[in-house]
Length: 417
Ligand code: ADP
Ligand code: ASP
Ligand code: MG
Image (cartoon, rainbow, N blue to C red; front, side, top):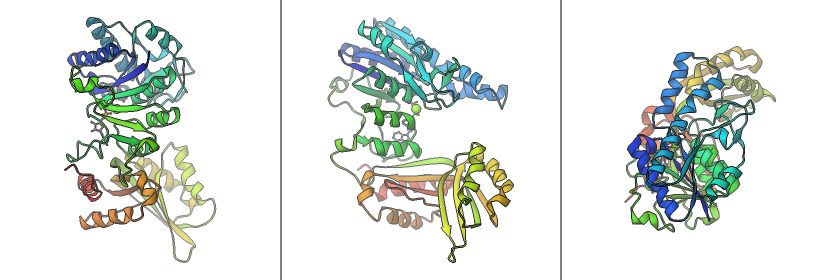
């Protein structure tokens, strides 16, 4: 019999009624003949609350104890869903990460899955038992619980689908698929029927939080068919029973997409800060002098742009860091002023990165030029633009986020009729 993974996010399991609704979706697939493994998130808002508690207890807390606390939200929902399934006559059992086990590396708080032994799950599923798995967690080499970073249940689901050889991994969430941009800020956003792995990876990395980045990477590497769909559909809706064409978005290989668009979607990510180093001596090793101290301070650098001066002796370097790390990054760079050798440093917080994504850009010139023209026409000042093959990212002041996303969405013909 075919195996299926069904993942339900926080809003889908936000209270007991919604968990009951999830149980009915699961029963529908069991009745359709699938052996089902379910992956659940914590109730929406729960993980934020748990994170806040660890910060209140101590701002600089032990990452292993952070994991002990924040992994608990998924333990609750896995047990509750198993109970609700049993209530409607479905044989079900909950599993925590350590019971499977899902083995991770030792990076507590942002661990990566290293290995999943799916044999016990497969055995129980073959006996007709639905496995209800706590997402977001695994077992680190120190034999302690590890969590996978925020939004990590998507990754748990795709990794389990790969480990048990599932025919598909259905990601149930509060929207009925992947849209051309975040439907919460652009009401005219359209649902996409299919998105290539590569585009989805860019969209997720650039701020579309509908799927965790790592889950898309795993789906791409292991060839897991991932399908994003809504948990708010009525489980009895006959359209859902038609397995050949349920409503949602399939993340698939590029060659499965017949009509390739130049631009597939627009993403945005807040909390970017910009730092510019002026008149840096243009000599070998200078990039290392700038970026090594930042890396050592655990600060992620993004969007690096360099402008060499006309005489070629100095360059201006501009890059972004997360807003939360802005003050620290400025301090690190001021301390390294002598070894880098720059004349002045400037910084500004509260920026937004807006990105235009599409595989068709590879073969289409002029996509970037039209974006700049459209934004300039709305009086939006562009601060930095690093190049890439299938995306353009533009840094702007955060006050213009919605205007910029809507302008670009219309410009590339993405608005729903
Ligand atoms: P879950 O709790 O189910 O994991 P998330 O909140 O993590 O759900 O992700 C779903 C949300 O992602 C949606 O409510 C939507 O606002 C947001 N989102 C951002 N960009 C997109 C997009 N391009 N398509 C669909 N949803 C998007
Ligand atoms: N509950 C975790 C979070 O909020 C994991 C997830 O929902 O995917 O980040
Ligand atoms: Mg999520």
